[in-house]
Image (cartoon, rainbow, N blue to C red; front, side):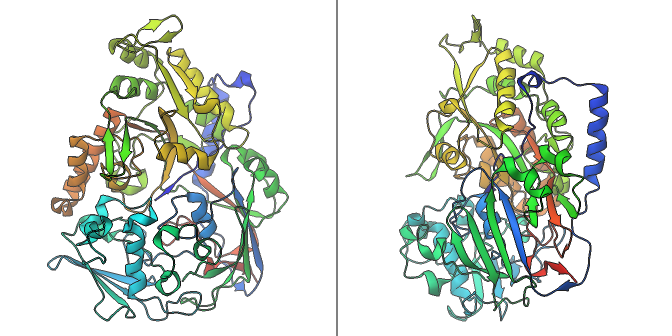
Length: 589
């Protein structure tokens, strides 16, 4: 699970355009664009590829990347994109996100023994030539669960594994539930669980882990120093198609083939990933400065007619959201603690703020249908689990005013006050981006101001990406609500994001009903598909009603590619974080 940056740009407009209006001509144009967007291919034309060549990738970001080359220790989507040529999951999946036997390892569930058996294939090797072994698989769990690593991905859901909680709490030096029947240098791992659940057939389920770490290489690095060590930041090992050749911290990474890659020799000689300002994206695409670059959706009209470029696209398992701070993370207890007296702990206030956002109008006006409002926190790609009846929060100032009036948020002059009569100022944290980010956030502020809500930007400005998440994750009192986003794994269970013991539940809301529904979604009863679907729908209805986290939008993720490239695919079935399998990518003969 990686945090998704608010990188969807929203158009360069003058102040006169901030108050959005709809007209017939504009709507027709939007429909045409959406129709076009739906026809994007998900992969390049199939052609025979030659050996050799360098691919230059432009990474659109307004801030340096952190460069943490460990899936356990990083929680940043940008880092995942930088690491994609070398990072590979232990498991491949089919088109329904189900784990199959085609990846670096196989996985078998035994419901009677309550075990998960992971077997690494012979010949799957680290980029230093060492076979990936059982200890490497087990060591990844140590990194996840050892408190000294301060791992952002650890959550109580992993404690379904026997002994993991005791290890996490320092009561045990080893994880008793992870067995290596052929020894540490064997290739088989048997994970003993309290119970199995239906999400375990999907990759990225967050009940067992889908990565390994090179124990022989990292064992001498203290856990507390792991995230900052050169072995993670500068000279990491991978069992994927490429290995790191050079890192210019925060700016670029050069990749060369992993000569020991188990699927065979990659076709490319080199991949160079470089940071580019989002404001320069369209010009970089038009000038063919890079071979691969993500399109900023609001710049689509500027680049769509570029010659010698193929565009491929996917609707990823992503969404942006508005979240309200109603508590804090308790490190000692390892859980979220809600504050009933928190400023934003009023359902009517939260709902009114949701109805105050004119998301549909913003997206139609600025992105030509390439970005669209989502009605729920479960993406539509999850099929039956997505609640088609969910309406989410459409723009409705009348309803918002009624909610605020009924809840006692009366106006005193220009602004409303709290039901207790005290003044009400709401601080919004939002990330910086390209030059269009400021006017779009200003638009939302204006909508809330129309309701009489005194909403201001935290620190009076948009916040740089790293600083933004530092404030949000550490519960900075200057943040009352924030706009964030998720890039989700291919298992829909929301436990990792919204559970009581989930660090990523950065709203910090907790309720018995939420706990109950999350438990039911992954219960033994949930092996019955109809039952699980029912519970997913109940959870979505509950979350939309409570409005602790309000879904905003998702977008087509469009990639501009050198038209000489072949083998590049953004299909979800085998991609790691919507990245291609880089060993397949090459230049056409």
